[in-house]
Image 1: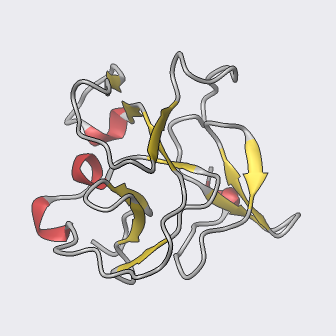
Image 2 (image 1 turned 90 degrees about the horizontal axis):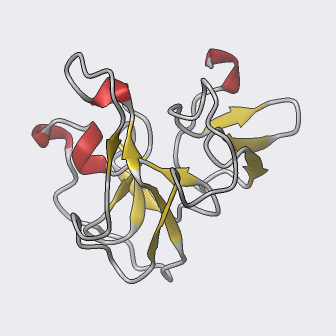
Image 3 (image 1 turned 120 degrees about the horizontal axis):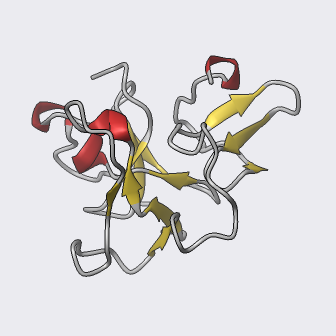
Length: 139
């Protein structure tokens, strides 16, 4: 499970890092939901975080890599999933940015400016505290 990217745990509205098994604030960047990206045995059992809950942004689609040989994007509708009060949907039809080849990629660290980059929202922001993020050079 350690190879997986940080994802949004809808059980508590916090980001979850499979590499460290820690929850943390997601910041202003968008993430895919954990239950769609991780196998059952890798999902967090609890959300042990006593910090204040900040808004989190859930991407309203699943990457094609999440499906077995799937070539179409899988859309998530607010009717399909129960969202914690602090979680907002973002993505296809909800953002003004155009989709690019990298839009399905996870948040990454941009060493050029020392910040994290959100390929879907196409902006930089503070990296999530205590959570691991891959380098943008891998995009």
